[in-house]
Amino acid sequence: MHIYYFSENIGFSLKNKGEISIWLQSVIEQEQYALDHLNFIFCSDNYLHAKNKEYLGHDTLTDVITFDYTTTPKTVLGDIYISIDRVRDNAQYYKKKVKEELYTVMVHGVLHLLAYDDQTEEDKLIIREKESFYINQLLLAL
Image 1: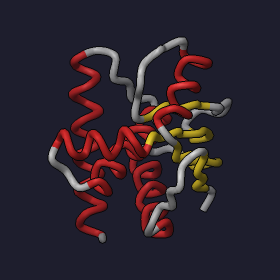
Image 2: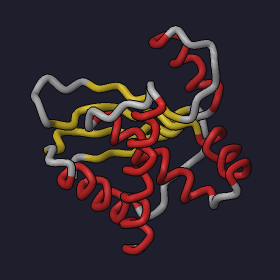
Image 3: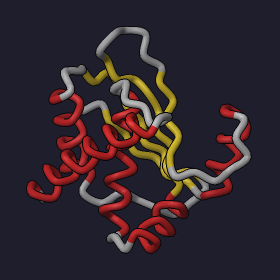
Image 4: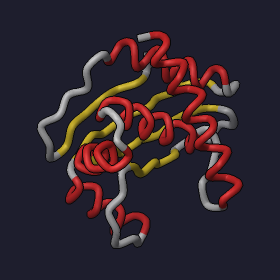
């Protein structure tokens, strides 16, 4: 597997890394892409807020930022930064388990690397449907 997990500015470690990596690899393959290298960086609100301002010019909190470094079509090569603070708050807000919200945000980031967008209402509907589809696959496997 070429999926790696890191923590920056927060005490967090992903459980079930092997199963999660297999699931994400499956998502990538089902979308007919090849995995080159993927990093997940789990961090705090403050850390991700600084990245959001520096690289995207957005002075807002967010749960995920995806950086795509791919130069080859249909290949995944990127970094996905995830605020664990946002994930926890969103899980409470949406009345979901934290790990389910985390997996949703993780696959959301991967879907961005697979050329899915969420700028329009139509795009948001498509990416949400994909998230649900792949989350259901994971939950059945765990």
